[in-house]
Amino acid sequence: MTPETLSFYEKVYEVARRIPSGRVTSYGAIAKYLGAAKSARIVGYAMNNSHSKDVPAHRVVNRIGLLTGKHHFEGTNLMQQLLENEGVEVIENQIQNFESLYWDPAKEL
Figure 1 (cartoon, rainbow, N blue to C red):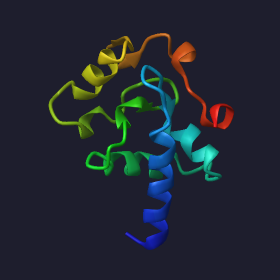
Figure 2: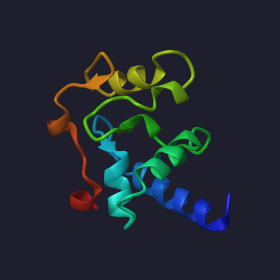
Figure 3: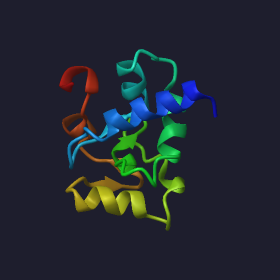
Figure 4: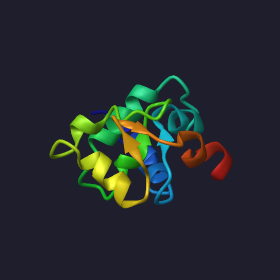
């Protein structure tokens, strides 16, 4: 990874650490907040590499509330279990009441 990539990842982690417990955001929302609106996939890569960095990656989902990153967590349902421990209901890999739980960094930070 280049120093620029590492720097972007650190910015992603700083935003993700500010997502409140029981709330979720999307890869695209973080990318847009950081001024890189077309970099949602890079935010996903950052989340995949964040597990040893004290980042609540389980709170970052796709734009419609699907747990698309769940296969990057240990076990079969760890991402869902972490969300449910925070009071987020998940049915068939889909966040329920996604709109009301959605945390937009552009509005919150």
